[in-house]
Image (cartoon, rainbow, N blue to C red; front, side, top):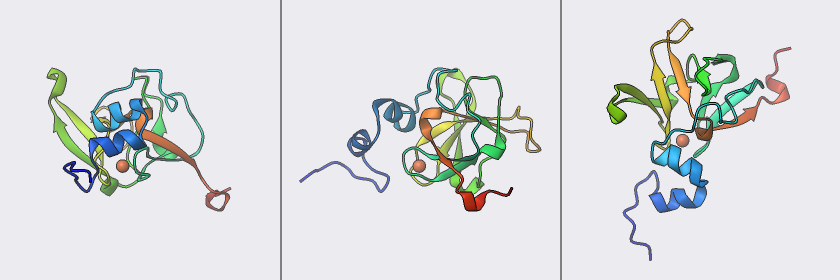
Length: 141
Ligand code: FE
């Protein structure tokens, strides 16, 4: 039997089996995709963005905007309970890391220079997200 030190959020080996190499690098090893390369940077469909690792609902297209940074950017999470933040001092920078509360995966960072009423810019890797179109019953018009 496997003797990995299992945590409830899964071992590296389990994540490597369920994620692509790029997803594993960003989500589980806190990597960053190159700017202007992600599939959701220049992306304008209406719907929801969920965690690519566990499906937790993270962001709505209603809160997505073009920050010019090269990464998908949002003014707020769909529910603040779904995203954890923690101080990140890696790469000689003081930043606030954003993580999925459900699976602990790295999503990106949040900065205080956003345009919304909260003044936040959630700078998120496309690799960390999966797009889910709204169902017809959720359309308002
Ligand atoms: Fe997750």
